[in-house]
Amino acid sequence: MPVGTLGSVKGVSQDVLEELGVQILLGNTYHLYLRPGVETVRKMGGLHRFMSWDRAILTDSGGFQVFSLNELRKVSEEGVAFRSHLDGSPHFLSPEKATEVQIGLGADVIMAFDECTEYPADAQRSRASMELTLRWASRCKDYFEEHKHEVPWNSSRLSAVSSQDKQDSRQAPGRTQSLFGIVQGGMDPELRRESAERTIDIGFPGYAIGGLSVGEPRELTRDIVLSTLEHLPSSQPRYLMGVGTPEEIAQYARAGVDMMDCVLPTRAARHGLLFTSEGKISIKQARYAQDDSALDPACECRVCQRYSRAYLRHLYASNELLAQVLNTVHNLHFYLATMRTVRAWIRAGHAVGTVK
Image (cartoon, rainbow, N blue to C red; front, side):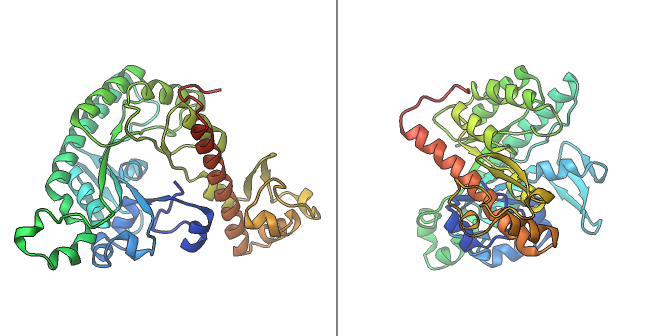
């Protein structure tokens, strides 16, 4: 899932995303809650209509962004009090509020509000954080079950039916909203196992592995992912949050992960770091100033088919906005092509569950 933090993938319009074959985008609850605000999006008919995107959207709960505020937040049993990074204004997100906001945004998949455990964290801290996330998960599910009919795409449809019919007419044709649970537990495999089992007991249609990519070594990330997957049902979507490089996402998909998101392809593009079949290229380097070859001869994206490395290097060195656009289009294509290869590999009948 490309990351569209504020309802847009930076520098790339929705028609280009469709052309690239993007099936689902990730939106950020924290940022959209602050601006333009959930009521604005709701009145526009939900995030799909607001950003003119008919394909699927997943919104995270905002837990990771609140976690990253550090000195601007205070966690309690009820939720998290924090100050906006934009203007310092005070806000409070509870499990119920985070779920309410996501219902209002109208994403296809929404996430339970969790506490992202910092790294490093001792055993006592990791357990306390996991227990809090489990209690919050139950509260999210209770709120969702009570209010899931309030998704914005229902508004116009419900106004046209009688109150007698409303109970059976709550979902617009072809679109439903699902709430996923999140597994936490720090870097302790046993806590992760317990978190997975107890989250499954609460009952969700899909499960995410959260709390990774918070500063731990990549080898430890891999170990925690693989050990946690063993305890999540293979018959339901398994979502690994915030990962990773093209090599990592291919490996995790082969291990049984179904969904992943990462800011790396877009963020790296803005810094001139491009992924190719020949390895990573830092297009800002002087060696490419007169290189007339395609960025990646094996790539079929519109950038590699039209522009030379020399031109891409010139755009970046000149601080042209087009550099960020073209770099982002290429990196997204490379990631999406990686996933298409993985899907073809799965369809060919190769067994998942091993990572080579």
